[in-house]
Image (cartoon, rainbow, N blue to C red):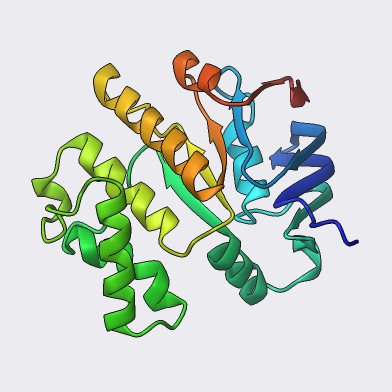
Length: 227
């Protein structure tokens, strides 16, 4: 019987940045396995390297040392095109600031990953519409981001991350720009989607309530990840 590889795994992960003559060690010997359907929070002070770690796990940056595997593939051993394909197939991304395209409707924004992957417009629209309904925005599909509330914009961003049916969604401070009530709504939505779709969530957050709702909370301190 074959064992399914972790959605994302990293071993002895390190990241160094050079600032002139100064060398800054941001991450040191980080090891992490993210299984199917897991909910993981990564917490730590500002500047501790949380976003750097998330970017490495998502293949948006490459480590100075160690390895990152997505669905069993070593990201350092594939070219940028294949890394992009792996990201599009297996991963979704949500940020503190939604990064929606202001000139497009909610539906068009959510269609984008499918169109980039080569889907036809009709199939992409049908799928995007279904996902927007799933996040309780079925009646807001033709609204542009400027016509939506902060919580609605973040729901559109989550729908965009989900539309390709990824195995894992990486979230960087997804509630950091929201009021408490709206943050709780996003937290509940993530929990419901995790349970119903078995999608893994890895969230970088300062929100203690959100972190405590995850199955595991990991502390990143001095570049080292602690359980």
